[in-house]
Length: 208
Image (cartoon, rainbow, N blue to C red):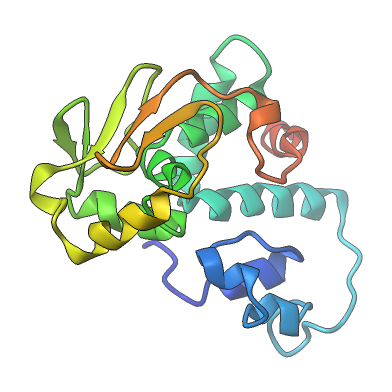
């Protein structure tokens, strides 16, 4: 099964809340979720009471779509988080935050994770000076993420530089707008991850 390429606003409507999958558009009145706050489809306006399983499934899907992962990818991240010391749910969120496409998004180089994934795929970024086109690559404290030299003069990054001057990344990242670089200072704690999800329900889903 390939990656979902349909209208992402339907995902927010199905989840019942904004997942901010389209970047700035989600903050405007043009956001479809603002106009149609009900599930998509012919029977979307009907109110359904979710089962315990349905509640856990929806929470898992919400997190999976937020970071733009396929089920198999998401399951691998969960299994890795499960094998790490500490709380599984928090480990999972931390692993997802460490993805290169997410860090590019958090630094402000892209308006959404989907756009960030495309930029990474096209080879516009380097980690510690080495070009990387793998969105799922995990960064570590001390890593430097930068726009490669050959891409810095592109109109997109020239315009982005002006935006970055007013952008404030999360505390666990530092940003140098002028040089189009960012650094991972440390790994984020749960309190520093603003993803609105109940990770305990996801752990329960996979533990059933």
